[in-house]
Image (cartoon, rainbow, N blue to C red; front, side):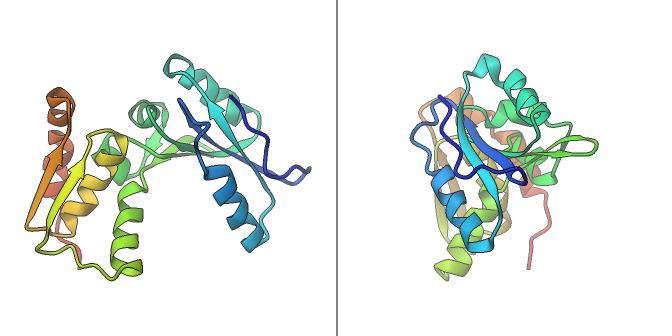
Length: 184
């Protein structure tokens, strides 16, 4: 399912959220509000794409002058493999939630953890250091928040997930994140 764009025009940047399902996403509305507040002309749509069609649809989107994609379930790990280059956050997580076209190819990043930490520390004035943290799930978003949460130095971090196999796949990212130097 593709949703209508939030705004059309010749000098309009093209963005979308890609997932399966994606009809529930508020991203077009939220990004439309951001665009109005900042005076940015953009179209932002929903792209409902089955997992087996992800690679082709990402390539088509950028070939049609798309600027960037927000990636949601179940595509965060697969989209990481599509990205030619990845941020260190995405490398540690093994998942991306943003894809952008650069001159040298598709770049992937994972902003899930940075966004969560910023919201907790800046907006809610919550200090994670020394606290007990429970992460529910072990999908792409959990992968994205694990490293930044560990960098915030909680006393204890537990991952609860219904599938033991999925939870065990987080261990390489958890070890890599644990090896990072603490941030100030």
